[in-house]
Length: 167
Image (cartoon, rainbow, N blue to C red; front, top):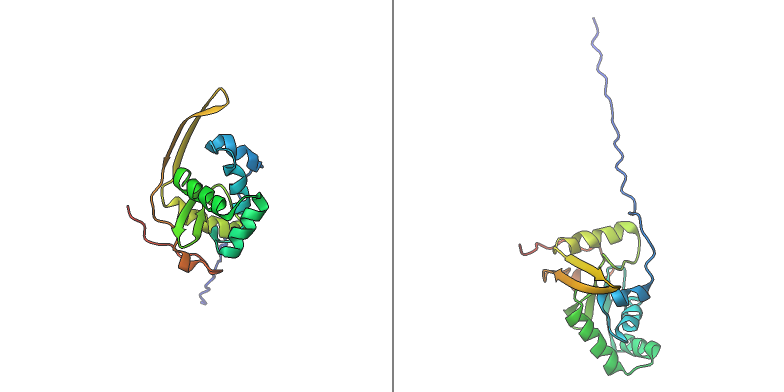
């Protein structure tokens, strides 16, 4: 009388692909976010400087490049970015000392896995945006954003680490 033992391995695969997407032409941001005049062009050029961690680390060379590409002064470029942070912090947030965080729900660079990780950190900040369109214009625009965002020191080419967020 021999006893037999069998082992069964069950492998479960969870599909975790990039979500469906639609192309958004960057010029379409102007009516969606009520960007005024030069702000849309500044945002487009600014996002080109974004790293894979959704952070733009500005230094004097990058300010010169941004201003040169836009054919404006460095001071005007700085003023436009400050205005974006103040009036549209659902798109760009200042981290202080020349570092800026770009909303990963709008812009992303790199692999889907990396973008998803950054989005998880960002989405825990409870970002909600409500837009109502009438006659082709944004009539109502409400955004609730908590101030906690990834610490710049954790991002220089390394994996972002989740921070404990204020409830």
